[in-house]
Image (cartoon, rainbow, N blue to C red; front, side, top):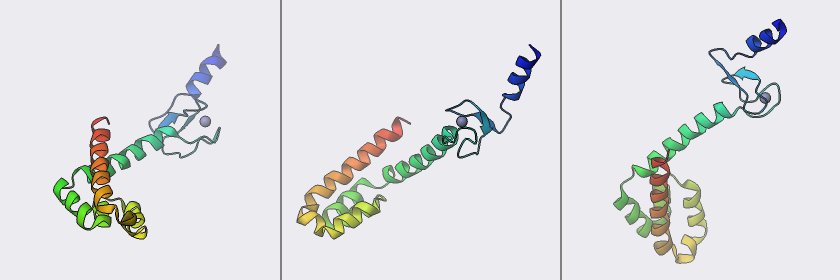
Length: 124
Ligand SMILES: [Zn+2]
């Protein structure tokens, strides 16, 4: 009985500790990986990635829709760049504006990206 109780005491997480999502071991909150089982500390990961994601989405949603639309039609790569999609901007640039279909494709695409971002933000 005494041993049993000691075990419980030892497994009580302190103020800066959490339970490992995989093996249940008490580990440091800031730990990236559980020292016991080597699995990623999800508590740490999910909170920081969702914060970063939220920040990213807010940046997209807060852009002026008209500006994004006009840039997407007339300077297609800048439409992507304006909402932080640098990768898509480069892709657009190097495929010669999606083989000249950019003025049709890009406004629809950037509009969809903004809509999706808004939806995802609302569901957070
Ligand atoms: Zn673990």
